[in-house]
Length: 295
DNA sequence: AAGATTACCTGAAGGC
DNA sequence: TGCCTTCAGGTAATCT
Image (cartoon, rainbow, N blue to C red; front, side, top):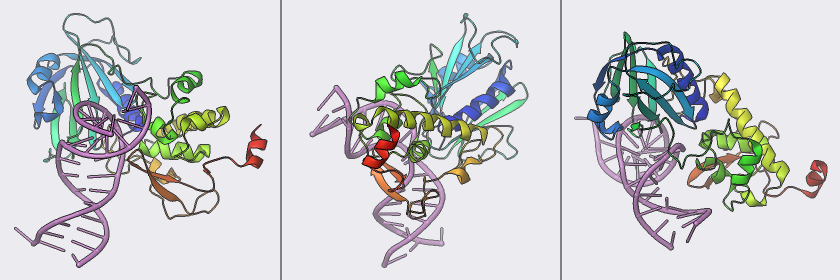
């Protein structure tokens, strides 16, 4: 399941390998992923040069520009001034999307798109067809998508999150509050913060909120360094699985002993998602003794 | 009107 | 060449 760290690794590789290259070919095997239509996407980007790759939350934002290959707009990831013929493509991998370079094997029934960048071939494969490539008129994620979880500051995040009555897990998953956190890293962040997933956000004191914020960012930055988590079928830009799965402390570990205290990890449904937590390390309410220690 | 539920898809796993 | 149900969870649309 691609979340912020997995998408970040794809973005870094895309930027490294393909910026400055011209999109010379585009083969559509399943047009349902292309919005508003395969024809419109093709017309907008085919023959143009990839000049910028950005990421916001789980969204990839690609900018294409008219003309020959150029060095401009490259490594910093920001689009140069939009000229005539500039086009923006937003990619979301959703549940099972895979975007990878130079595949050895031939496209199979789940391969929906093949892009040729002046000799380099990129495939999009997506078993469940939830992913989307969407043409935009500006290099920005939709307005209802909040700031990236690694970009926002604590004060801003608290302003957006602290008044919510919903469970803190639901607030972490709400991409409008801050974007990038999915089910795996939400569970891992709450374990590391010692906060119960069902605790209402507006019931948490400042210290607990700060721990949730800090641990969410820390666990995702760590995952980026380990190439992301492959749980179902994520692959990086070179088609390789991520290494972070063995570092997961609670996700999909219900019934196993907690790595910190030995208590059996439990599983509950929160906001429609499976949520895994240690009932001892993540109490609903902090004990008076522990509260005293925090102060 | 924020929070909850369902639709979109396919494959894996488990019961019988 | 088994059939059926349930589950996985990101986002948009639809509910209450």
